[in-house]
Length: 428
Ligand SMILES: *Cc1c(COP(=O)(O)O)cnc(C)c1O
Image (cartoon, rainbow, N blue to C red; front, side):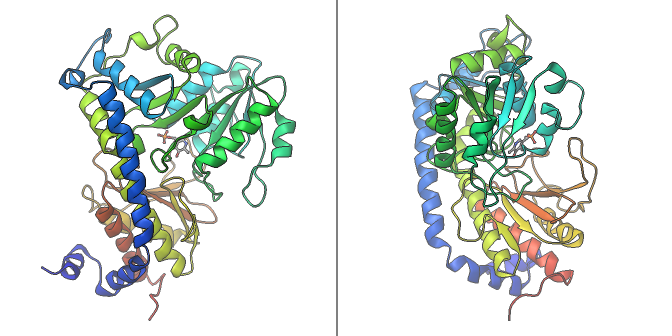
């Protein structure tokens, strides 16, 4: 069967397919550059696995307390080597990215300390963690205060404001690499490195944590290569490679990571407890696949930006910008268009392709959220997914795709649904 006929069978009209092919023709050099980064990062992961002599005994399941869990301990050494840090905490007991960040923050901030975000407001779910929105057990409730320096209107760091906000109580600085649900730019690792150097020049003993969610393996280096004391993320995003069914990681200095381990389990117990419950094969293999998976997701993001920018929708990053995470924001301008876009992504999925996404009040978010995800791991956003809060400017955040071909189909289907709803007209 011809490829056009295959796409028609999947629901993509010939006009939408041909429009996509025309857009793709110009993207080949950028795809080559993405493949080169993936090749480099594959080497980095392989070198860490070889150095730590990964073997079949590391895949064995443990239960109960998980004392002497060599598979878990060795995985943490592998992560530490991949991120070039002294230590790592990589656990299925870390339930999600927000949890990993909460552990990192609450382990390293004590009553009377101040947390500073020099990059504007943090990710939505962290508002309750910090206490920007009132919540039980927030850092604020424990006497940790919060300060924020906003970005300049052009999205750059406001160094004067940052210097002003750093005071004798500033203990930890949190830098979010990816834009999250904001339409600011994401930061390159080099930019983050400059910001870290600046903060440490103002206050040498301040600790810096980077929320690395969605950024892993997008570039050849990570924020931990440029002075971050902790990098933190979720295993159902990039580094889980689509295979990890749960989990989070914190890589960083021994001092910081040790405290995180005591916070996660209990003072005195730390990293010694925490059974792996049979998840080691998916954690190791997911990390192994992650650089390739991330490369497919990046191609999908760039394809989406080029498709939608051509049709007049604002995209962040735009069609030609360099990438620092796998997220693509497309400002669709209306609730109807967000729903149509998400319907398209959903209908392209291998799992739950027949369900219709609807906006709902998701815990941790202060407006209705729509989500399209037909994933093998529920809620996984390294798998092809789209979501966004239903509020102006009605931007949908598109990410993931375990393979480039699936990401491509998803984007073509999103366009198909917008065309069918009369919300987009293809150029003649
Ligand atoms: C996803 C994400 C989080 C939170 O992770 P969850 O797994 O959804 O709890 C935090 N920060 C950023 C930038 C994210 O993208």
